[in-house]
Length: 364
Image (cartoon, rainbow, N blue to C red; front, side, top):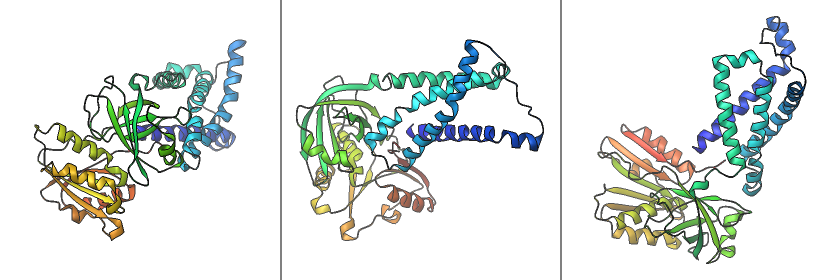
């Protein structure tokens, strides 16, 4: 969904730029193709004429601001905390440009099927923009709770347990939630590292990847208020094909959704699950708390085969080490993008029916 949001936004800006460039080159186009054959604007007087003048003035600065916001989103140089507030301006820009289109497009154009479709899209976009500005998006999925425990399990990983109570609607292994510990900082996406146990106690493994997550061990404490929104995500580890070989691959903190899946198998051990090979890549297995936890979990799950790869020992995972057999392979991957691309490329060279599942976890 976030990828769809991102690319439709880029397409919208591209079309807006094309429209602006055509307007700027209008005289040259008329000289090249002849007289202007576009639909003529209806002439109004009074209030509507004033509104049209205002809408025309909104177009160019609105486009400049929109392009600026898209560029800083794509280059990722602005810290997330600042970018988040800048991104909230997007609905206002959309409403301004929607008014620009509604008031300046010729009346005859709105009486054609293309105009009807555009009107429908503008109404839908305006509705979504108003929902965003009033904070209604995701409101039905928000839960208030308390931080129950904070434990720094390694130099750069903190385990946080939250108590949401039985109001929590439940989740699948592999899903994530938008977690707010600090309203000024806002929500951050973290994968749930536990199975749904119907108690409302949820755990997260948070890696220090930025300024905010580095401060969590010092700033977070038991009893602190927390807001969760979710669950989200379609990284469903139980959706594999029945006759396919099941392979799970995790790199670093990407092990989190698989911890939830293993936890879920222990809770539902009466159910029959397909055999799975779990490959975990880490930098320093000796000091990695996840290794001990994985070993403890997989010892209780005979249908899970665990394989470890320590980059400090020059151990590198390749497609050959996945030991592909049979004609169908389902791979679930969570970890560094570079490793995902390498494995996907190597697996595509093999003559198997491949399904490579990967959560798109980049929000900008």
